[in-house]
Image (cartoon, rainbow, N blue to C red; front, side):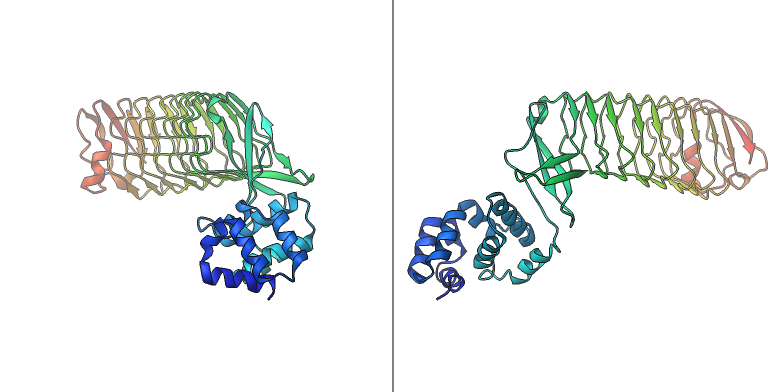
Length: 389
């Protein structure tokens, strides 16, 4: 009986739970395949409980398990033949033949975690491979991250064997609620900052986002109360929902021309934001996008905008002048409610019943011709001056 046949026989008789007791498992192999002494020695010397458990860990995809096992064995210094033998010995009886072939051709989403991790600012940085390339990794997290103040994320890591890997992504929520973090430098190897990455970092004052970043996920910097300036890199095409929501100290945000979409509540409650220029190509101001931006005095809407969502500028108390582009066809409910200082709006003539409407005091203008719901977008406690567009 071959080693693989012995493993298959053991699994069929005792189930995969036998993988959790290596002593009994290897004793059973010795009994069933005594003539394969050399192969049994390879297994005993190089396969421990953690590797056996990875073969049956249903919380991980099969490819992920196999890649991680392969990486562990590589770090042990095993030859390719021995690694292949070990993976096939347990993988084939478990029905992983196709996955093993994928592994050989590297046609897999790979994963790698190092331990012990490199020391950085008295913390440990963990990395994980996520692409088909051998040099692409994503940042998983830090040990003792809640005590970090100034963080310079390294762009590369090396395995014990000297193979270099690049950090290409900062994963979901890894620095969320790090309330001591004040400064972050992101390396130019990073292409994506994933959702919630720095959410709730209430002491964060400065973050340098390199031009290599092409994606910033939802709520990535939500409630970073002390963040004052953000420059979004060229190449980013979307500002996701709630990306900067609740950044109460944010005064300046530089949005590149590559941005074509700004998500719901992207800048909601950015109470210190005073000026924003939206690039041409953005077609919709989503609901709540600038809701609660109490210091917003000036905003430039590009000609590409066709829709303004509900409460998009709700309680922008300092906004005093607005030009609505000609292509806008729909105004959402309460788009401009609570804009106490908004005294002049230039809009396309189709929004009015009469050709001119001027000086409407302390009441909702009666001349808007855009449906009952949308008319309430224009209510105000002050004076209004309406001009023909």
